[in-house]
Image (cartoon, rainbow, N blue to C red; front, side, top):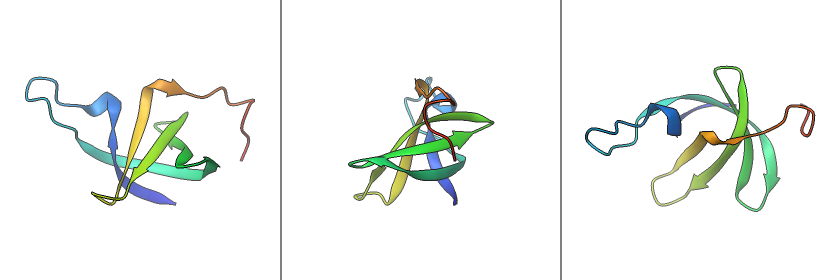
Amino acid sequence: MKVQAYIHSLKDREHDRNVLGEAEIIRKIGDNLYLAKVNGIRCTAIFNPFVSRYFVDDVYGIVDARKYTG
């Protein structure tokens, strides 16, 4: 499903703010851990219920495409 999520690589470092962008949540892979895709990159994401948003880590959470298919 396509969602508006906070994406790590889009962070506004000058003002220390997270920035929303479009990501695709592919599936759940753990306890509050999701496989996501942003700009063709498969990475991890978590869901924050307090703000009702996904936080996608396309910087440090890049996942090997061979590990999770789907």
